[in-house]
Amino acid sequence: AATLWHPEAHFDWVRPGIILYGASPSGQWRDIANTGLRPVMTLSSEIIGVQTLKAGERVGYGGRYTARDEQRIGIVAAGYADGYPRHAPTGTPVLVDGVRTMTVGTVSMDMLAVDLTPCPQAGIGTPVELWGKEIKIDDVAAAAGTVGYELMCALALRVPVVTV
Image (cartoon, rainbow, N blue to C red; front, side):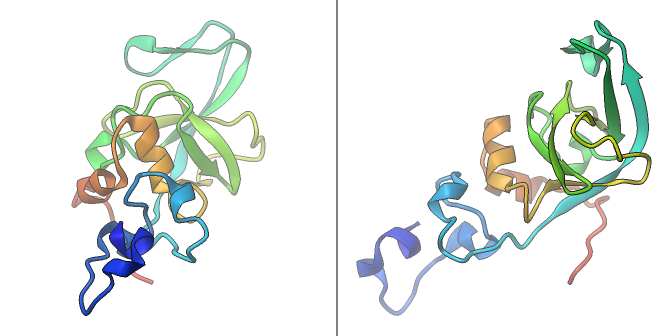
C-alpha cells in the first residue's frame, strides 16, 4: 500500500505486495483503478448445463435461492473445491459471454449457478469469467467477505493453469 499512497517512503527498496498481481491492498478496486495496474490472473470456466426455473423453484444447497419469476440459469463448472469462495452470496458478479450477470444460490463443491436472464444467447460451452479483466477479484472477494489475497492463494491444484 505504501508503494501507492506514500511516495515519500520510496527509497532503494519497496515491497509492492498484492499490486504485483493487479489487485488492491485495500480490497477496493477503485483505489487502484487509475494506476494502470491490470489483473494478472483470470479464473474462468464454462457453462455445463442450462435449466429454466419456474417461479418458486429453488437452487443450490438448502434451496437458498428462490426464483421470483421464470428464469434461465446456467450451471458453471467451478466451485469451492476449485478455490471459488464458498461464501460468495447470490448476486456475486460474473461475466457470461461478455455480459455481466450474477451468481444465484449457494456455491457447491464443483459447481455454481448463474443468472442467464441478461444473456439469452448463453448455452452449454459458453465461457464464464469468475474474476479477471472485467470481474475484479476484489469485488468477488468483498462479496464473499474476504480479500483478493485469499482467493489467489486458495486456487486448487486441479484448476488448469494457462500462462500467456
